[in-house]
Structure formats: C-alpha cells, structure tokens
Image (tube, rainbow, N blue to C red):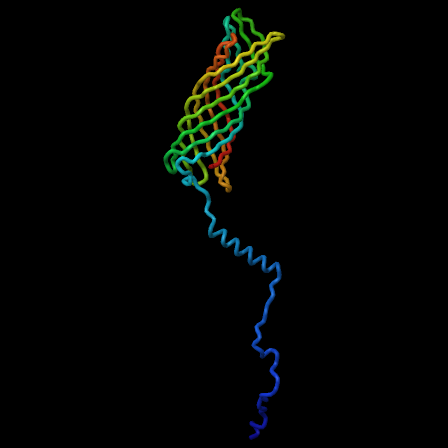
Length: 250
C-alpha cells in the first residue's frame, strides 16, 4: 500500500513538455559546409567520367593540322652564274635562315600505326646576309645578299603511337620551291627569281597535352635547285631544318 501511495499517476489533462513533441528539427548548414559537399560531389563525378585522350580516336579522312617554326642550317647555298662566277653562301651568313610554316596530315588507314598523306608549306629567308663570289681568275669578293624562299611540299607519311600520349612520324616526297635572290657589290645590283624542284624527308616526335593538342620537335632535310634567270644561273640548296611543332585535330 505504501508503494502505491508513493506513485503519482500522470494527469491526462496536463500540457506536454516541448521535448516530447513530434515536431521535426531543422538543421541549417553554413554556406562553407554546403560548398564543401558540392566540391566533393563534383570531384567524385570527374573521377568517374575522366578519360585521357588517345590516338585511336584519329578517324580515317580526318586532318591533323600542324604549325611550326625554327631555323634552317644549310650545308650548301651556291649560285653558279654566267662567266663561271660562283657565289658561295654557306661560307658567309646564308647558312642559317629562320623558317615558319604549317600544313596538315590526312589519315588514310591504320590504328596505332597510321598511314596517310601530308601537304605542307614553309617561308624562310634573310636580308643583308653575307656571301662570297669566286671569279674565274681566282678573285674573291664579299657581297650582300637578300634571299626569300617559299616551299610547297608533300607526300606519304607514317605515324606510330607510343602509348596514349606520344607519337613519332616520318614523311617524304617532292618539293616545289620559289626563290628570290638579290645580290649587291658596291653599286652593282643583280636580281633574279624563279621556281625549282627538289626532294624532302622529315621526322618528328609529339606529345599530347591534357587539352588534346600536341607539341613536339621535328627535323626536315631538303635539297632543291632553282633557275633564277637574269644571268644569275641556278641556286642550289641543301640542308636541314630544326623545328618546334604544334598540332591539333580538326
């Protein structure tokens, strides 16, 4: 009896405590916390969807555009004139010419080893360069030369993928060259220009950037002969070009 006397029965009419209510509790996140969740979600999605570019995406018929700049180092720059007068430019300052150019390669077949055709062009030249004229009597005089060259060249190429981010390539074929030559000694000025032909071969290596573009280095050898006319005779040139290349698919 004493036990029941110490117990108090709940009063149904008494008001309930606020903590006993079933009302849901709303928690408000700070802007910093919200941003953090969004960044984590975005990072997770990017990890799931990122795929590095690779060369097999190069479709048949798709052009790969390439631009380049560099320098020509010539082993031979000679003009054989009438009267057995020969102008030698590689003993002067005509053996080094800046060059800029570009073009495209078109894929015809293959996967990791690609076969196709390329068409390229190049501008090079130099003003106020020094050359030496050798006369039939053995006399040697220094002359000033302005030289301008424009090349159009092309032929078959082969490209080999080394992994997913590197390729090497090689190409060769004919060259059509336009040359403009001006030489002066004191008050005597001679000028000539014309078209000629020759051969070229080139090779290079390129590395893929995260953007999908390519950068690399190349070397081109060429040998050409141009009839300058105007009593100047033939301009014969042979040498290599060292190039920095930038390429992208279209």
